[in-house]
Image (cartoon, rainbow, N blue to C red; front, side, top):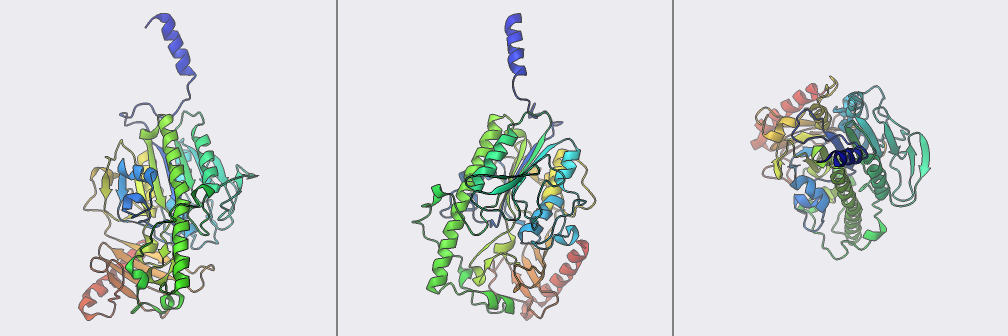
Length: 453
């Protein structure tokens, strides 16, 4: 290279944006993080999970080029408690957000605070929720979020302390803000939380998706027609009969509108991935896609979430990070929402706070910790003013069994063999043949509840 061309080259290089990705083979480079979170998104409502007609090619790309987690769960199936657990790595009983009407205390350490203190540029864009908690929260250099749930159209966001009203569809707006923030010049690594409102009810989709899925046939899981024999009283009281025409038509409408809201989320995911590619930082970015809790589409006659059945507690989770995860990886271990916080910090080389109750699953990316990983977990749900007919729940789920109790009530406990009865139709709590299993599950529940206290 001549002296003149070298000067020209250096001048041109100096004018380029500075991003935190130097060499993908340099193990000293700290990764960036992009954490995409959806609302009320059940584990099987993505293309990569084998959905019969929903297409999510961009979300599927994360799973295809990274890892899909086949047994990912939340420790409380409710928006605010689950989101606080993602942030803090702690159970709701520990971080204090037990319902949708409680703020997350500023003194409680989140992965964002730790990463920010470790030199990361951090941003939160989207739905924070946590009651009507508003304005920038600790740990984030950039903030753009509505009060509470926000709205699907023409939302008003608090942007770095000032209220701004946007025109358009919320999923598109938060995506645009996220892309703009990602493209900022920076020399430090970054962490973006892009937390969607969608597909939370009332399932308002983008106009461009109004005709999607009009001609598909919804075939429900057979436990939609559960006769509820052996189920606790509260389930029988709130359950709907979806064999009735009006209920069935309502259910189909909800399913299709819910799916239409996800179409914009998938488009958003594609825009984020393309932005990271164009910035040449995609392969040094831990891209996470997850849901904050599951959702019922009529199973056991139920809608909403909160209960301890699989449709409520299981979530989609996929992570792309080619420096550690081989394409097409499938992780079958039990992973919880409280595990994301310590995993992020572990990957960043940051200290994990003592308050964290989850565990880093970084080693699972390369086949480590297979034998020592958890084989059961505690699920809890607390009384919530928004659902007065739902009792508190304390349950334990192992790889095969689930035992559900309703503390302080006369509700019937439940025991399910998930290997033989994955749809949770037969309550075995009074079956003499499974009495030894029941006793073991009772002891296991007491143990894991004590460990999480």
